[in-house]
Length: 291
Ligand SMILES: NC(=O)c1ccc[n+]([C@@H]2O[C@H](COP(=O)([O-])OP(=O)(O)OC[C@H]3O[C@@H](n4cnc5c(N)ncnc54)[C@H](OP(=O)(O)O)[C@@H]3O)[C@@H](O)[C@H]2O)c1
Image (cartoon, rainbow, N blue to C red; front, side, top):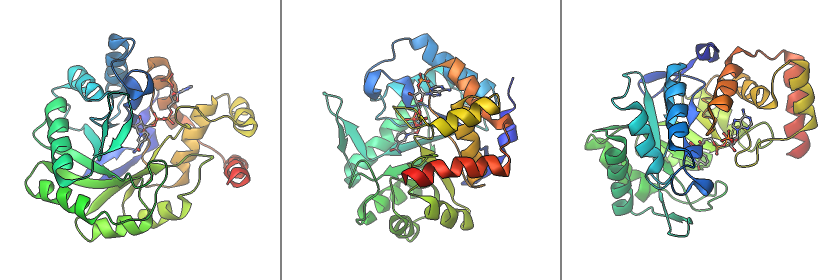
């Protein structure tokens, strides 16, 4: 069995979590909509994650919608004391599975209550504001109204810590002027390196950086260099991609997503993989080539 603790820890608000965690988005049905094909398999993935030492699970009530949170509750409630569940608000799902911005204070308040109910919690550990100006990548624009609404819910005791997702550096700074930001969740992986400067900036401030799509998302990463390195190390390309992220910065917290217990075990075993400096340099070149 892998020792997930070898990935180390980093602070997420007032808790320290193991750097290799789990992202639950893949547990809903196709397109993150509706129920999973195999409900028991989804529950098994969640139980296996926690049994393997994962203490940080990422979710949202708009996965399913509601279904992923309900699965987490069914599989893991009452929650272990050390488990940190991070959720995000700021969108809803249409009947056609579309993703729609839902950023008014009333919509954000409703989303927080939906998360509390479906997860079976009185207080949410961490809530990320999912910024929706441009759904696919960070774009500038004020988040004052949205983040102030979440800070008010935090003041009321419904949320312990706040974060932002799909955020620019300026938006992180704006949010921090309203309430402390403990994590930033943006698109980043071996190939998609847009946030290199932001990661280091956040590290200096003790803020966790949590890449979404760490394995490439719906189309997992493919690269000849990645495959060649993996073969040389007797590892899989996904393990190498995760080990590279762990080595990239100490404030990096990983939430690889999978609907498969086999893939989960494979991913968690990345904690055992140490990349030599020359191997990291070889992998660095993948992102530099693609920008
Ligand atoms: N803030 C945001 O806007 C945002 C956006 C997207 C995601 N997220 C969060 O980030 C988490 C991670 O992102 P993600 O799940 O979308 O993408 P990901 O972790 O980059 O990749 C997931 C994909 O990789 C496959 N996979 C996982 N492990 C594998 C393995 N060992 N071998 C081969 N294929 C493997 C999965 O398929 P299988 O199910 O078959 O393993 C799935 O298709 C999500 O779960 C979610 O919590 C946040």
